[in-house]
Amino acid sequence: MSRQKQKSSLFLKTMLLLGMAFLYMPLGLLIFYSFNKSKLVTVWGGFSTRWYLKLMKNSEIWNAALLSLKIAVVSSLAAVVLGVLAGYALARFKRFRGRTVFAGMVSAPMVMPDIITGISMLLLITQVQSMLQGVYSGAGEWQRGFFTIFLGHATLCMAYVTVVIRSRLMELDQSLEEAAMDLGARPLKIFFTITLPLIAPAIASGFLLGITLSLDDYVIASFLSGPGSMTLPQVIFGKIKLGLDPQMNALATIMIGIVGTLVMLINYLTMRHTVRREREMAKLHAMALARDSQ
Image (spheres, one colour):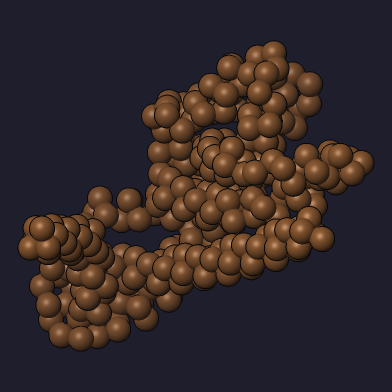
């Protein structure tokens, strides 16, 4: 029996290593070739940081990166606010008129192809612009750009944030909220004092997920962007169509470093917050047991 367990453990470890290698070897090769001296991306010509120095002087890429970062942060914040409200409504209010339709509409951007979302958002924005032209003569000067991309990305990210928040709320013990209600606390105070701190890790996860989705999106941004509002994925895709550029390896390496650092930092803070909450709950439980025993 022990020999079978050893074989099973060895097989699982081997599969894990192969899976990790399949996932992370391409990233390792990308980082390795970002220090390549040669202009040919796949041919090693010696160690050099020339492409990092050249990337630092590329204003087009940095302007696109700054625009993408601004859109990602703002759209993720909006998605978190809307997602928390939608997730709370779906998790706490079991029955209300139009609940099925509301749940379907909230999750629709998550399951619908991005090209459909981009086309529908473009048609909506064009229709609103044509309506505004009849009311305000200066509306024709309004162009697609930051605001339109923000609307598209907030719509997309809200669906994912809602799922994360709803799942967290469904697994929470409602005894604390019910106890606060019995003590006379109002629903708004219960939400900000009890519920919101408990779902804080889920909110942080949803915010990071929204930033990742926004920075990664190309299809929706291509429909909603205008002149002078090219996001980073659009710039990268445009350059790759002309041939592999070693600067893209350097840019990808920088992005991997930033994202990896943020993920590890958020995981550390989330685990620390969870451990602290568990200790506090255990202490309160012990105090309650001691009081009941007296």
